[in-house]
Image (cartoon, rainbow, N blue to C red; front, side, top):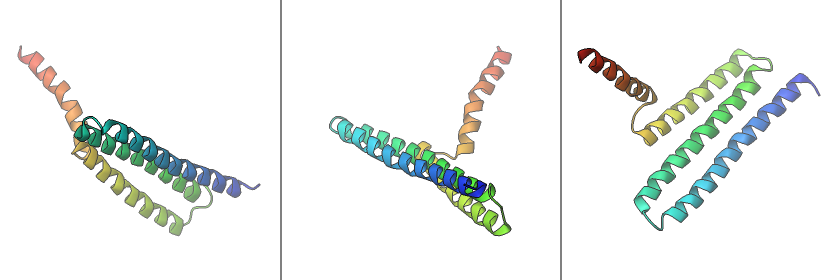
Length: 128
């Protein structure tokens, strides 16, 4: 087996893992939702959306990794790298919109807010 065949096989395996993650996550999240929906339906729905969103984000990461493995590792051409850039851009946009949907804010806004409390604590410590 040649190196390119091996890399193609690894890329397909990572692709399959990404799809499997999405399918298994969908099944698990849906079953949890159906069990929890009997009690508090609104809380169960929120958890369902969060679980499904996280599953999709993780699956997308695997699919992007598979594309990178197959495109860059063999013999990259301008065309293949351009196609990869388009795929990564689309999947990144999907990831960001899923993140926005789950958390209600863009990913880079969350990082600023996570740092802000520490900065406020330091500022208050200096005031006292």
